[in-house]
Length: 117
Image 1 (cartoon, one colour):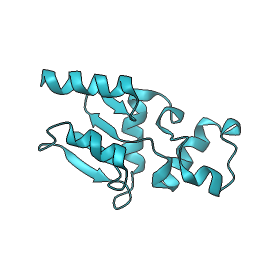
Image 2 (image 1 turned 60 degrees about the vertical axis):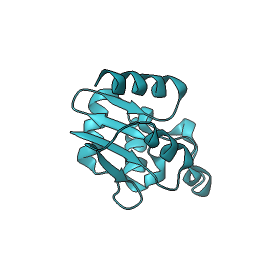
Image 3 (image 1 turned 30 degrees about the horizontal axis):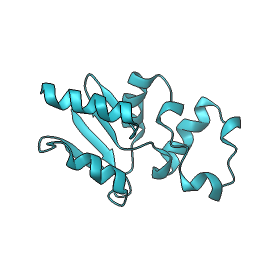
Image 4 (image 1 turned 90 degrees about the horizontal axis):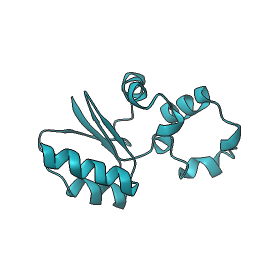
């Protein structure tokens, strides 16, 4: 299993995807094909936290007047499954590893991952 979860309208996602050879990866555009509960469970096995998968930059936070500080783990899960913008992205998922988001350290780890392959 090699999947990338991203948004085609996100410039950062498309820039990161272009950095790597993803010819043998399944590309999942979240707006068209939202994350499933099973896929979220696979991600959770690596992160042990739904909050780690939650995007605090989602426009839905303000639109829904959500107080992120008051959320519990089950709330993060419910929101991620409810709307694609609550999932941090891009997410690269394999059988052995997960790379979540676009932070500098994550990109460095992705570069190492792809250079080893």
